[in-house]
Length: 506
Ligand SMILES: Cc1cc2nc3c(=O)[nH]c(=O)nc-3n(C[C@H](O)[C@H](O)[C@H](O)COP(=O)(O)OP(=O)(O)OC[C@H]3O[C@@H](n4cnc5c(N)ncnc54)[C@H](O)[C@@H]3O)c2cc1C
Image 1 (cartoon, rainbow, N blue to C red):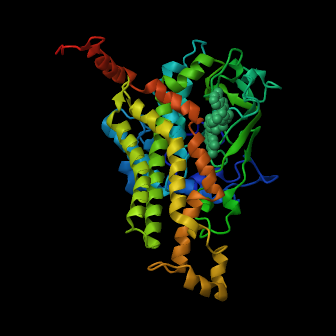
Image 2 (cartoon, rainbow, N blue to C red; image 1 turned 45 degrees about the horizontal axis):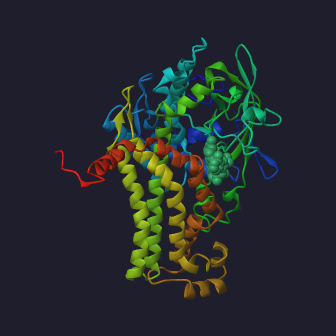
């Protein structure tokens, strides 16, 4: 099941160029809603077109023959080059290539696109590497389905995002206790050829830009929640799928110069509604099985691979933030000041801490029982647990460094077109080596990174994309090597008793 698996004919098979990705998206019938209206074509609408372009750039990087060695490998099914984001690594070298590809992509958008095609690719390759987890002994071949669908995604270069958290309606009640019970996305009907899904799920980052959306649940479930214990894939243009986008920061941006990040990297987030959506059995991987729904996250490499991509991306972003901070201090003529150097070093410490945790994930990678390499769990979940603390600290330190410079800026790029205003800007809004246009450009970039509405959304994203902080911290609790630290405590306690110091036993 490779090229042509999907009867809508959007995929011809093989690596896609950015243009092919955009062509498939253009007027494909998806239903996206924004500002009270339906968006007919996301590839040309001002709220989405630049983000589409940024995702297209990712496809172009992978499609570029010059990047073949770093961005692709040979599909075992078709013999054609496919994106390396789909390879579940088996050797240290393959893991390193995978890391390099993700890093290359993240550098093209400065770590600002969190849910490009490489995020959920990590989940699917992790799932497909352990298909036995999906065998529910029902007679339906869910283990085969996950492998075949993964191959379809890989061999057709499909962009898939996911919604795996129920909407915040009433968290005091389980999924089936919501009123009415079909608020959270779940199964309402079973047919010979597939199932019907009704309800909503959050928070579909990139759903308006992607080809498919993966629907599952990572939140703990309770007895009676079987209808919501699913994992499946739906084409974003499938009948009944409605994508309700949040406010667009790209559309609100007055120009690229004024909002250089929001205008180009607003990957969008959305409430995804599944209204009587038919899903064929071959796109269903977990069906009404709470145990398998839980195990798929924690007994396959899916969670660690998908989120390792996130850590690579985040490390790029912190490095970028460090660069912006350093450049601003240099521009403001304060770089030689020891207090400023200490301030910048504090930002550098955060970026380095995260870089170190990323290195540690690769240095402690191990081969799992299926023969696949997985990044080290302790360093991975430590990074995840710290992210919600590090990022706001970075933002705060950068704000302190920027002072009023990010506010005392011309209202928009249009001010430069007015000779009278321009004269004042050139005289008063400049620094040595930085004429007005350059100074304003850097400061507006900084503001879009740390203070604009786009920046605020990023703060929220980094806190929550892997789950709320109280959950991400608990994951480290499950993976920290307490045995090793406990052994030290035992050794310390064994060295003395009520009578005092004991003789050494070694
Ligand atoms: C910008 C952004 C993009 C996202 N993109 C995606 C996406 O693409 N796909 C996707 O599936 N999800 C996505 N998410 C959703 C994300 O997975 C959820 O936001 C996350 O899992 C947290 O769930 P929640 O927002 O419902 O918060 P809740 O679980 O409701 O928690 C919110 C806060 O309530 C308190 N709280 C709630 N319950 C408890 C408890 N039991 N104990 C202690 N404190 C508690 C805590 O203070 C917690 O931080 C995104 C989120 C954001 C912000």
